[in-house]
Image 1: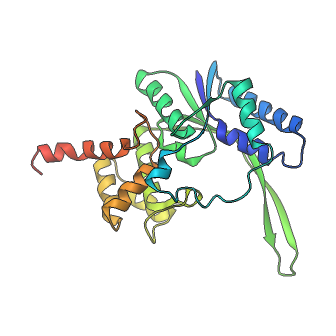
Image 2: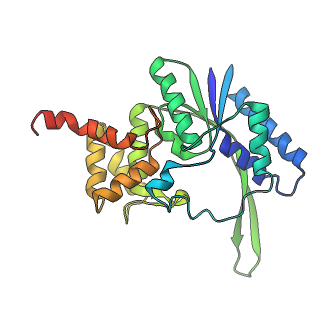
Image 3: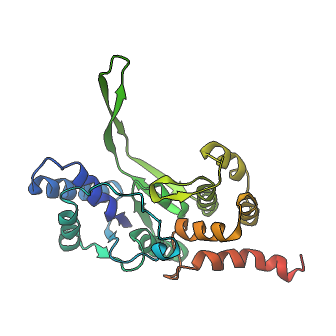
Amino acid sequence: MITFIDADLVAYRCAAGSENETEDVAVFRTNELMRLILHDTGATEHAAFLSGTGNFRKTVDPLYKANRTQEKPKWLETLKEHLVLFWGAAVTEDIEADDAIGIASQECFYDGGAYIIASLDKDFLQLPGRHFQWEFSGTTVKKLSDGTKEYNKWTKPAQHLFVTPNDGLRWFYQQMLIGDVSDNVVGVAGVGKVRAAKLIEPLDDELDMYNTVFNLYDDKERFEKNAQLLWILKHSIQPTEVLSHFLSLQKPAEEAGL
């Protein structure tokens, strides 16, 4: 069993959680999380990926992730370097770690190999196969009527998921409708998670999913731009992979004279 690890998120989570701690504590937490992931996924081998320099999505849309202006956690770069040196993480160029995991995992999928994708990032749910989301905690802050603040700690338990090819496609097309606020991708006005699910979940044929979403967009150019931003590469490092995929969907109808 090979576990593909989203090392970007491992580094960020451990750095953010160690902002007021020493470097040694941050590194210790990173090692603990990596060992937990490998243990809980039953890994016999692993491949971890970090996003490096360059990102083709910035060429598609210069505003991609431009809303991420907050200061990065203090130990983030230190932990990334540790993941490379100690855990053998590979650093991508011109593509994101998500794409490297997409390509590697789908090669396993079509070859019948055993694998699991470890991340908390919802974007990975467009990739078929087994997924693992490790436990993580946080704190919500609620402002009370008297002006004071109420702090509530919460924990989301670890979970194993299985995504079928059609599940993955449905997730992608729902994301096309919803957009992705964290990445500064604007979807279709007036369509939230609930309506997107109602529109896409009943569909089994991808061409129906495509037509449903395309018809709700205001123009083809924006549709294709968002598709390139949201699609995780699965077969190549070509930025236009999703556009070629769309053409392949329509080709049978064209050949039939429809």
